[in-house]
Length: 516
Image (cartoon, rainbow, N blue to C red; front, side, top):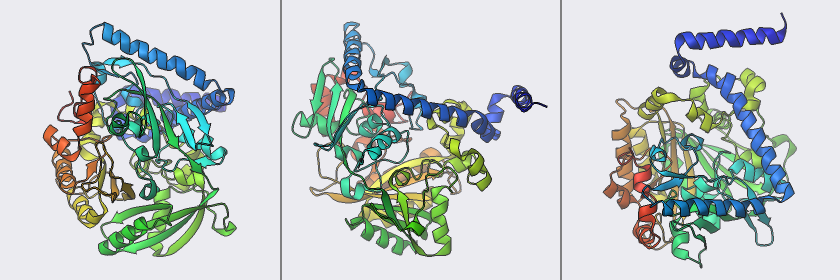
């Protein structure tokens, strides 16, 4: 039989099976079939299209001209909304399924959608050491361009699909954040279209109140149309040192000491149980020992968290040299460790060699095809949370995570939190070292209940003056939310800029207790 005919027959039989069983049944019980046959090829097409498009636009230098036209179009839409009486709040017209956040917000159905099609890198200014980008440019796009010309972002959050707008309006972190802070702290300027349709640029010195209020505001002060971000010279390799650590006290002590050591350009921990972890420290370099090179970004390589776990099993210290871009996106192929729940055999060598080049599926496509049933199951039996707590409380925090949700591995990422105005800052007047504890997976604690268990964690985080990343499900009541976050400057600007009539409050936009 002709191979193409045979393949067509298989596809027809598969479609008939879906028709008999029902799409929901297949997506829930055999989701890997749907992901491997449809979402992986679609994801490749998406990636190729956006990469080629970005390369052509940047090479032709047409992005700045198109940018000005796009800004004027956004201003026109906002002014039209105002002429119509401004009866509904505004929000971006980008479909909710396209975002990396797993949160499902229904506000786009009731708000005035402002179409924003801005996904280009506008300018790389090596003299000022700044890159100017549009809000929908993503991290994969930015690293591909910057690394090719010898530059990089000081803080480059992990997943390829994370956008500049999401990282500015929300937040972003990476293993270099113990030196540079969160993503917002490497931004030097924002350009926004405000509620009256005006275009405003803000920096630390110009419109500084707005500059400090934009991060964590989730698009409730205006529409971001461009950001200027610091860049630093890149090196070819990351010299990465793996150290297996056992015992909770020893884990906390080692991680805290390595995070405080500014000679380490990168610090990260993967905790595999309450008493077992691997602490990784790295530095950029142009020279590598040939026998220690590991190009972990290649599609046939083991998933990074599994590779790291081997050092724990071997109970040893080791050093590897990893290409810079491979290091930046080390967790991308397995979406940290979430992909093991979708494709259980995804780290099998045979699968990696045959299909690994298509991995990972786009998170946006996973959301689009998950259906209401899977969404409810994930909400009730799956945790995706990042809690930011002071480093001095790390032992207490890890114990609470173990007791309340019992999800492993945990991602540990240190960051310095500057004492600056805005929604997120240390309790005192001095910069303070924090740690991001990321929990992604199925809770193993008995009688887990999503709302009650998350609220317990949220209360603990508030009590130690920590913060919850707002991309995830937030169950706090309004007073609790504003106890965690400092709304002083935010609410002041909302009144001054006419945002109360134009945009929802950040709490109403992201918290489950307020969403409809």
